[in-house]
Image (cartoon, rainbow, N blue to C red; front, side):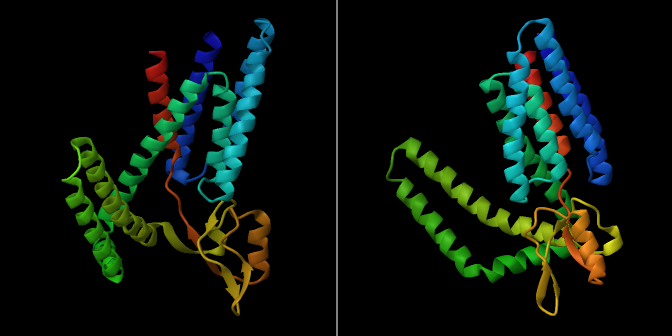
Length: 273
């Protein structure tokens, strides 16, 4: 359908522009996110009226609503920034009628490509700060050396037991061992990368709406602003100014929109071409 192709083209264009903004400024203009929602619903409405198929517009509204719920939950769990959540709503409005197979494939593409993208980004940061990052990594491993020894011992027992089982079970147990060891080291890797690059002690004047607090803001051991809030708003920044706070710890996230762009492009190429 021509309308579907137009929706795909508009979404990819918005994601490409948003990727540039995200990489340069770590912010996504609301005009792009809201513009995608408005344009997607408008295209659906026009097509629904001309083709006498109101359901085409209705699917866009349903997709928007479902994406809003997912985005809202992930935003309040601090797993997604506000700009990313709004783009997710745009996906819902644009792809609401593309079918469950497409939606599942897109979700898997975002998870797989997004995970690989984040790991590569973090790996580059680790290498760039290796003089500081590597000692921190070794120190973290040493701090939990007892847990490390228990895990390695458990993995060895699993592998020994695997020799007594059928080939398929051996493969599954070997995969389990690799996953356990990788998860253990990856957890320390992420903490180190976060410490050397993603946590910053910034002056109040550099704060913007949408920033994530990394630590509670306290005055005389009394919390005046909790790090549990989803993100900073104008009222929070105003409160910090009133209390005379000079600097706060914030967490800088990875610019994730390029991963969205690659995931959507990959899924579209597979399904349409």
